[in-house]
Image (cartoon, rainbow, N blue to C red; front, side):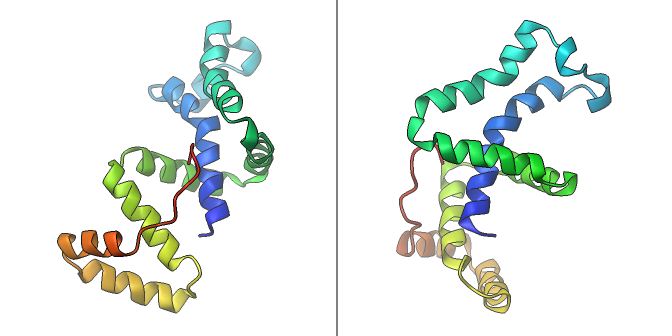
Length: 145
């Protein structure tokens, strides 16, 4: 997975997380079409995107590109992105830092090298993993990522 795709997943979350909040207890086909939503429901969906858009003006071109790419994703890829975002949201700050460090370490590896690295990683104790992350931190990430 490339960093660009990871950032896409994060940006997509800004567009999809409110939908989950609205739809957690309802089936997708049970929810109304956009034109049938109340103004309050529309606001619930739009507010997080508007807030991020206003809070990070330097990232507006990137956010617009992510939104366009999201629209072209096939449904299975969108679902994988949503699952990844749910998993990310459930992580502690330490787990997120570990995920960033691992991603940074393996992102330029070929498939075989990545598999070998991850096999070694899984054999490490939690303390060894924490030590590795401290020794190999991910580069600083921009705000909002």
